[in-house]
Amino acid sequence: MAVIETEALTKRYGGARGIEEVTLSVARGEVFGFLGPNGAGKTTTIRTLLDLLHPTSGSARLFGLDSRRDSVAIRARLGNLPGDFSYGPPALTGRALLELFARLRGMEDLSTAEALAERFRADLDRPLGQLSRGNRQKLGLAQALFHEPELLILDEPTSGLDPLMQEEFLRVVAEQRDAGRTVFLSSHDLSEVERVCDRVGIIRDGRLVAVERIADLLGKSYRKVALRFAETVDPAELARLPGVSEVAATDGLIEFRAAGDLDAIVKAAARHTVVDVTVSRPTLEEIFVAYYSESSP
Image (cartoon, rainbow, N blue to C red):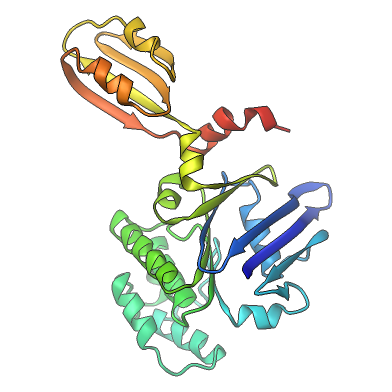
């Protein structure tokens, strides 16, 4: 059974853009990435799923339950980290915050919450008002996870986290999937999503433009390649290779875009003395331009 199902879900703010006819399905035990640049409609979709916003039209079901009529029952079974996580009075400590959430959920045992706080290196005893954005985010993750919910809905969960804690978060997500739980992960960080998600939905200008497996999405994108040679190399040697475009050469440095695998490029470069090589993936916005330009509104 799908854990999340939407059918033509639409939310408009008067004349302003919200989301338009979003239809998607997220399976039980799946880590689903919800991608898009800031302002694309990710947060509006999440708030509508959680009945924090009422849809203009269309429907959403979580656990087979109606998102509006059954919102209380739904919230009891999920964990949520909003993108604008609020933390209460500045004098409140992290421990007091988790105790409050535990009481609201009818829980007495805080051992899981404390274990998560230790994993994320969150200080439970300092006032929240004294914590940095990243340290407050750690507490936000702990409160979303500590009751071991069936569904996690996370909006930009690694915002403010340092690289070590981003790695720990990705391990936690993988553990949730291994335990059969479902994760709906909103992000604009493609590399983060690439590592843990099974499928992704891409939203742009309030519309869902694609739902794809990660491998398919990356296979349709390109990479930026920069090769620095010890000697002068004719850029036409690389430009004629399949998938190579936008070649530029300056003082031994040749830069270009490459689609598909890099085997032919590596073999061609190996005929010369390579001093340095850089390969990077495009940003999500660049993928939109490169792959979805034909379906632009």
